[in-house]
Length: 333
Image (cartoon, rainbow, N blue to C red; front, side, top):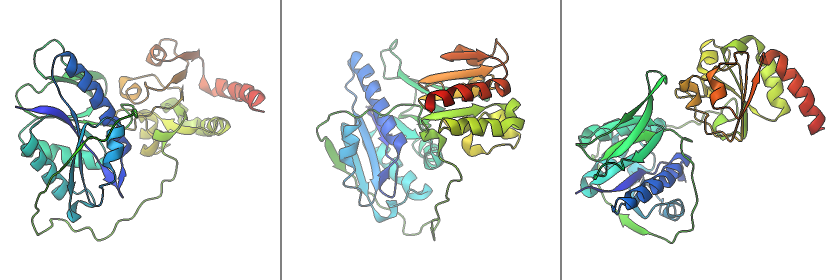
């Protein structure tokens, strides 16, 4: 009998990844949906690591009812070999009903390996997860963009458990709650003495720009703005904002992949998102439609971006941005 919603807790240098806290909060919503069906699922954080015994308190504050803690020197850094093994061992030992993993570099590496080892399916890059309230089972409805982001497909895994999915950072919001300390389960495992890969050195690459996933204001440009990036950057500087880009613009080589917004780029949740010359393809909007305020500037009055924009301006961004800057400077000064 499978039970409970498990969430992989990813850490780096003993710091919990933001996406793990976001998934705990979302798992708590799933727990409430299960309760409506009379199913008593709990949220369980799975925390492999080394010297991480101080971290469960944070996990309880973001929705975990229990934490499975597995400490071993070989788990100090997440690796394909050791992290995949311990997660597979935990799934076999506890038989969870579902298992959610952040779609980080680490998560995308280990999730398919774990799914293959425990003989279950995996939905990658999910954007919506909800309980199938129409059935009398614990089935999850997991939605993800397909065909380059042009369509959305809902995937189910009716015959195998756990139901597994990877979810990109910032798709869900993290919500801190007032919670008492829950149960900590200590799990022990063993590893092969021989490591397939030996880590000799780690070097942290310094980002050339700030992470747009953490930006409060983003001014994002489409392919048509490739020759007007100075205008975009100047306007962004006026607002102390970060510059983002559509996939089309990145493909021109004008800006790097690190500022691409969308299903194949980054998911962002800024206070304000200003889309300049962006048509609003599903592939792009899947990465920014949770912004609190979306301002769209496009010369095409029928552009799809206007369907999700809170404020729409029909016109050429090259002509409009200087006028907006002029008015903003009056206010800011």
